[in-house]
Length: 126
Picture 1: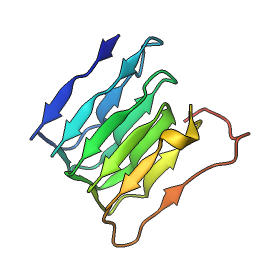
Picture 2: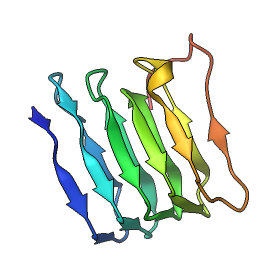
Picture 3: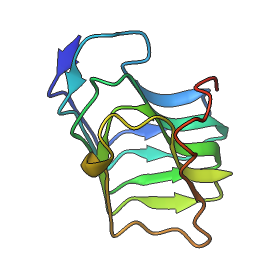
């Protein structure tokens, strides 16, 4: 369980998952800030938010590129502000939103955006 952690000015290269919030935890993992982080190597996911109690996370500026999925919001919520997306299979994947009103995407830049919002009955396995 963690809250209010800031990751700032980091470059992440090739990896399966660049940053994972609450991938194993079922407790509160909220209020994190990912600021000016550059995830530019090939891999499955840039940022994954993996639990329904992972709320109000801020992804501010930075770049997510060359991933199968840029941001995989399996559960939880986030605000993306000024994030650059480039050469991802899907830029943003909203799986099973905890509270849909808690999603904000502001000034995102993507040459050919691919944002996927599956139906509510979508299976959770990825």
